Length: 178
Image 1: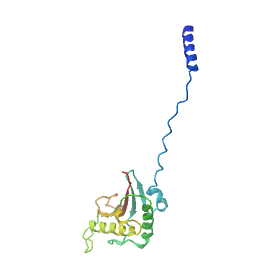
Image 2: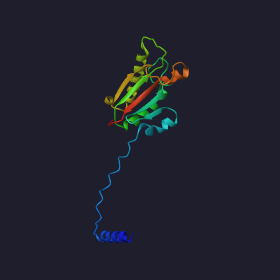
Image 3: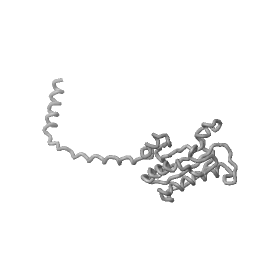
């Protein structure tokens, strides 16, 4: 044991006598860019009021607005009471880059009128009406409207409450870079 200590002591003395200069440490990487605001942040007051819902995903943010009260039954004209909410959404969208798709949804109750021969026609016209109002703030090349009728339900159409949830407009912002 003593012989081991004698050998290690000499090694430690040699190491201590060495001129070791502090190695220059590489500069730390720059901090990641601040996360850009997302729609949920920009629309938090409207969310708190219960006026809409926002789902922020990695590749998109989707604003969902219930269709009841948004349009009269069988109509594609946006109710005047909802127009300030659309202006609020447009102002938030104007702060973020990326294409925007307005999607109209209906329940499964068929509509057959001269103006709207099907739910697809009604949902498309409703989406287009919302797109037209967003054009007051956003450039047209960013906006697209589509109608999907009852093809993407979020609730069971067997109940009045479920049908009400399915009547909606979604405004989806594609996140740039994805």
